[in-house]
Amino acid sequence: MTQTKTFQIMGLHKKIYLFLIALLTVTFVNAQDKPASPAAVATGKINGANITINYCSPSVKGRKIWGELVPFNKVWRAGANEATTFETDKDLIIEGSKLPAGKYSFFVIPNEKECVIIFNKEAKQWGAYKYNDKEDQLRVTVKQQIADSSIESLVYKINTNSIALIWEKWIIPISVK
Image 1 (cartoon, rainbow, N blue to C red):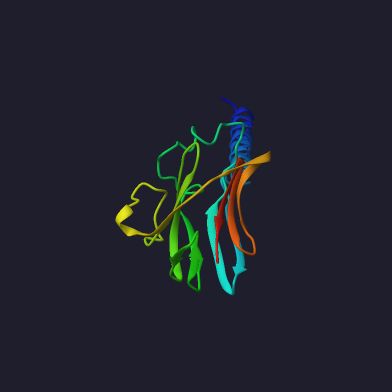
Image 2: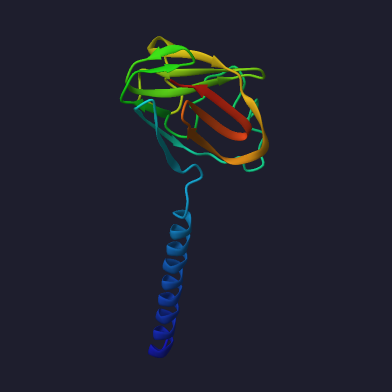
């Protein structure tokens, strides 16, 4: 093999190597664009209490949510990834029952007619996999409403006297005083 051919082969290897590095870099950058369920925060005040809801917001993506992706009659983390957290710096009255100031994991048990809302004392947990009902601070039952249009990404709204979980065609309102 001549020295010229050796240099040509080495040049070709170098070009292939640089091409692969560029391809991997572009793939990595594109994979970092946006998580499937980005972190989100809802903040607001109700009767002087500062409320913060930390959650990850999944999208519908053409799926049937209630009763399928989120099964009926099972504890759901009320978001994606880590359990949703609900924090208040003052005691609140939720649907007529007292919720002491503090930070809680927030769960929902949906069914066709109503939803059980759960404030659990174990604030730091992944999903609902290790959910323990013995750690529940408060459970209340609310009736969901059907929205006029579909909401693609899960969102929490803090209003003057209520909180609402809104996703797909459901609005789950929670009275707060």
